[in-house]
Length: 528
Image 1 (cartoon, rainbow, N blue to C red):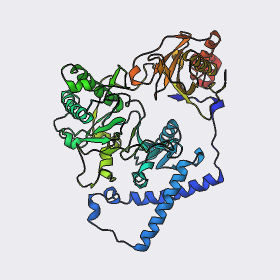
Image 2 (image 1 turned 90 degrees about the vertical axis):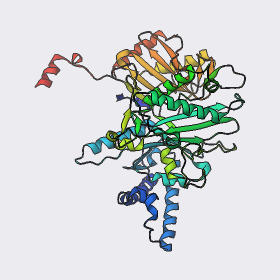
Image 3 (image 1 turned 180 degrees about the horizontal axis):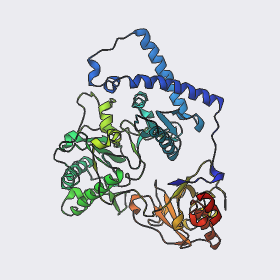
Image 4 (image 1 turned 60 degrees about the vertical axis):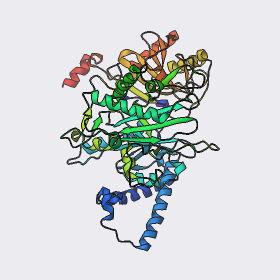
């Protein structure tokens, strides 16, 4: 896939002396840590089962020095994490931090590709996660090769953990669910009974699926339930790490979360088919708002998109200043639980590992794991051929006409779509977040933010944004939506201005030249 960023939206990063000093200090620290980690058994290093067998020698003076160094390190990491200067983000072979997801992925791919060219290279895959700044809510996307960052996670105050794992497209994952409903809109529902019934139906579906061996499946061993409910909302996460097939070393994992989504939709079809005969199945069709007759799925079917973030154990959603602190994601202990942990609020390494949707070990040794996959399932677009993408950088100017939205290969078209959308939706604030171009089809997809009005429900969505598909062949555009309620629907055609159609030629300029575009004398020169 090619990548295009309009020249007027590209911003070069400049490293200041202060940033350089901070980066050098951090790199020296990480280098020392990595040497120790590579020479240490992971279980012993992180306090595993073997840690108590050989008690380490303790030196009070060294312990005090270690605590001071630890406090200084945490402060330095937090300073770097909170900085607004991208150039000061943490830079190291084992730790990459960016403010934009795609920038992080690009840097990871560059480093991995470089390592692959080295003889006898030992490659350890990066894990991805997302950090939300406690002060201003700004997100940073991080990639790490080592588990030592979890130590920092557990040392944070309870109200300041806002971490999410990031399930990168085309990486293995475990089966996971996000279950929720409004308590006010569904006062007669017992959430735990719904979860218990869901697990029963899940076991049936696992045993009925040829691609999965569920002979050894036991909810008490393989299901982890986490809760972050409050007085207004019932909210649970389920993570299921399926046991290995007979004769295999590693667990069964899904090839990626698109295959996980396919299985979940099969399960939901089973629930829907039993709705009339099973009152608990019928109760899984919950009301979204009080007084609203429409029903929604108890299972959030929108958490299986590409590059999805999924909240981590012990983390909470960020609370705005002056608001009540939001509940943390804690284990219920109703299925699997660690008997050695005295309290559900006590940080536990084993619970952390079992509650991860990312199949961390399978990323390292894919051949040792059974990959669950279904024929014809993928995340790819139905439009084949070369694609190009771009993203907004810098600030947005909400000026009329060709202003803050004049980005991408067709800036006048992008600006027109936002302005036209604001007009017929009777809302304001539409802005381009990113774009994807399919030059061979004359199609440009614009992902928006700022105006969430949806033609399908005739109102604005609370959290999910909308997109527009511009088809220059039809000289028109239409709306599609990221909300699960609107999955598979599309809006009516909206006409483009006649003078904008000529911008479709700008899409073709993204394509590399073919031999048909090269003069005969140039071809002769190439042949020589």
